[in-house]
Image 1 (cartoon, rainbow, N blue to C red):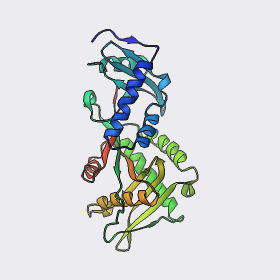
Image 2 (cartoon, rainbow, N blue to C red):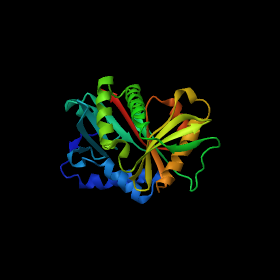
Image 3 (cartoon, rainbow, N blue to C red):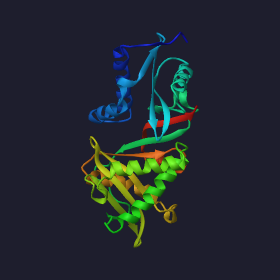
Image 4 (cartoon, rainbow, N blue to C red):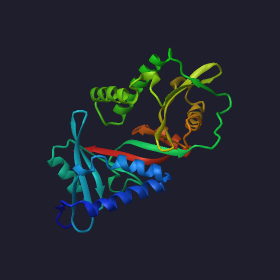
Length: 283
């Protein structure tokens, strides 16, 4: 690798970077409006990134504060064997951890543990609920108990993924729930469901319609532990598609934390493709 040089004019790099990001989302089946909406999220804070080149490719890096820790981000890497330089830059700028967002495979970051994935698939035009399963709106009286269970599960998922300590995960949970549900049960655009079979509630769902152009985001499609292994997990995916169409959207998207291999296998088998993957290591 030739000597790296920090560039002050990022114009040449930025055009190519944005086209590569868009190409990745298009290849994943995103509509053009959705691909561009996702690009806006991917380039958030781009003016503060550091961009370098050795004449053969590009490296873009930055650091952020995340739950009290300094975290390095490798935003772009097209320099052959450039990962070492990027990690060293992050460490020199105080990062205790370095992460990367990937589309289209792990590539040079195959040894970084998976911390999370965004998954998506187009909803069937007229999705049908599985036989024997009914879906109704969660009631306001059921909401507090549901909320407590969701919060506990969310914290456990974060800790299992290895991204944060239990204390950091609790702080992140408080922040995320307050941001997404500022009006609780009555937050506009959000819907809460109970899935029932044989007269029992076997799981719940929480979705946000219009999260992105044409996309309903599934914050939670949960089958209770005592009802798992009965096919309800696959049924919950169908409920997600049904909910997306109920909200006037064409696709369903959700996040899965790293370490949840059972869920990832289910999502693979039900056609929910990986849209983004987040990986990180401690420095």
